[in-house]
Image (cartoon, rainbow, N blue to C red; front, top):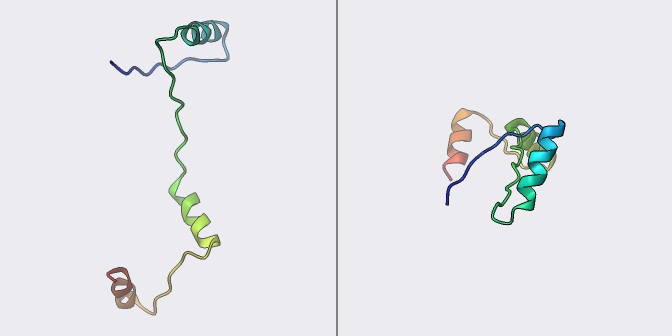
Length: 67
């Protein structure tokens, strides 16, 4: 089985028709593309949750990371 990626503009009449045709075929499966969360958003969420570490200097930071 091969995997194909097709970009369809769902806001046009043609795009809606193509999408309806593809959905009517039972041999075709759809996989929704998930949005990747930006790293800064993940970091800010962790900071709000208190998942941070404190170090007195660079050496202490490296030492804590290697534990």
